[in-house]
Length: 332
Image 1 (cartoon, rainbow, N blue to C red):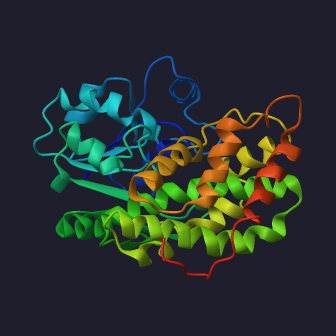
Image 2: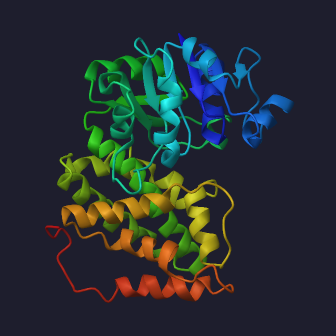
């Protein structure tokens, strides 16, 4: 199989490594000239996570990457997808299969990433998402995990999951693209909360966060037309350990540093996803108190000013305890 990975950051470089080293596919890895992630790989043949297999073709020629592939895997910032895809569709993609390996909801529109792709000319029947738990640092040590492929096209879901499986990653077939995409994106929002709890010394609240967070996300998924139970699958609840507890999670680290009044200098997708989810909650009339707290902490508080993060974040957390008492599984 000829596979091209578009995007050579942390996850994109791992995906190229996995496809070439584990699956023995023919792999092209594309990155943009001038970006540090690409230049580092070009200069050193490796980054802090992986060493490129010699068989991988590293290029900044997007036409070459698109043209040489049967399957195109995209791994870039979710908020950049809409502006990036017209560059891809400028080439002939009529026979290409696409796999989106990002977790996010488009801020301003509330669109899922497959919806964005469809609006940019990528046929929905040719598009899948690859989500679920797993950290590069564990995978490269040979520590296995389980992940999920989903699509509106069941045949594509099965084809890709079967083609990509190995002793390192066990894939499951997804059957709810709405729940899969929303759940995968939302777990990054909860990762920020987990980091805030760690930073404030409230780590014991991670248990309630897991229970209430999953219910909150499930309620939104149901309102959007997805399966309520998807929030309890691999895309969301199944990814909690790698997001809420891991030292490697960018989103958890973002929240932890925010509680210290320090800005995190790497991509934390949960920030903009919190804004998008808040808008979706208002659109569908769904109560999303945890999401609202993250939005307030990231966009309305003064947590990053004067090292006042802990007090600001604690005030936001404690406001959740002032909410009216309800049954566990209230409607909306």
